[in-house]
Length: 328
Image (cartoon, rainbow, N blue to C red; front, side, top):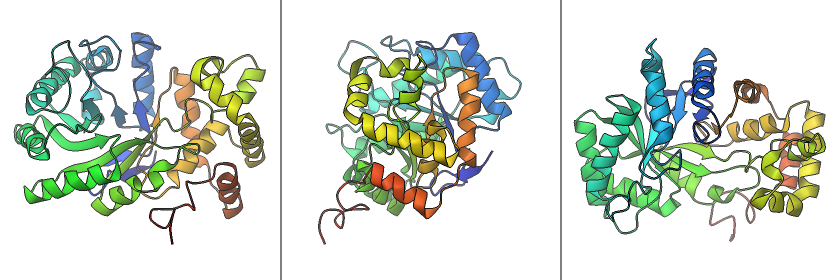
C-alpha cells in the first residue's frame, strides 16, 4: 500500500479510502466486517463514513456497524484513520441538522457513542451551511479538538470560495481549520478543477474524491450489461446517463482494454495522477470488489493515454483552473 500525507498535516493515509456507505443498506454486517478486515490486511488505513449512512433518520446504522467491528479489538481502531461527517438530518426537530454549534457538539457525541471510540480522526462538514457564521462553527470545532474528541476537521461539497472563507476565518482564530475537502470528482465530472482544487491546494487541503466511477458508469458498465450484470446501470438516473453517454463509455472501455486494465482501475488510477488528490473513495460491496480496486495502484499512464482520456472526457472550458479555463 502507498501512503500520503493528508493535505498539509503529518497524518499518513492510504492512497485509497474505504467508503462505508453500503454497510447496512447493501452489505450485511458480517460482510462489512470482512471488508474492513481485508482492508487492513491490504494496509488500507483510511475509512470514511457519515452519521446519516444507513438512511434511517437518527439511527447512524453504518456508524454502529463500524463501532461493533472496532469493539472486536485486535488493534482495529488503532490502525484506522477514521473519518465521519456532520450536517445531515438526524431527527425531526429544527436543530437536529446543520452546522450550529449545538448540533455539531451533540452530533459528535452521538457519533462517538455509535462508533465506540473516544476520538474521531477527521470530522467533516458534509455540506456548507450558509446560515451559520464561521465564528460559531470554529468555536464548536475548537471545543471538540481541545477535548480530544476530534483531531482534524474537513469539509465536503464546498465551493472554492467556501474553502477560502473557512480558512481565513480559522486563521484569524489561530486555528488549523480545514485539512481536507471531499468532493465529487471523476473523469465525467471535472467541475472541481476550476476552483475547488486550486483553492484546496492553496490552503493545503487534501482532496478526497467521492463517486470516483460516476455511479459505476466508469467501472465497465457496458461490458457488465452485456454479461448480464451492472445492476446500477439498468434503471434510474444511471441508466439515463449511460444511454446519454454510451458511445463515450464504449470508447473508454475499449481504451481500457488497450491499456490492459479494468475500467474501474483506470478511473481510479487517473484520479491518483491528478494534482492535489489524496485518496479516492472506493465503496466495495464485497471483499472481491475491494481486492480488485487495489489494482488501481498499479495503473500508469503515458502522455498519449492521458491525452486520449482528455479527448473522451474533456475538462470544463479550456481546462485547468479559472479564470484561464473560461477567459484569457
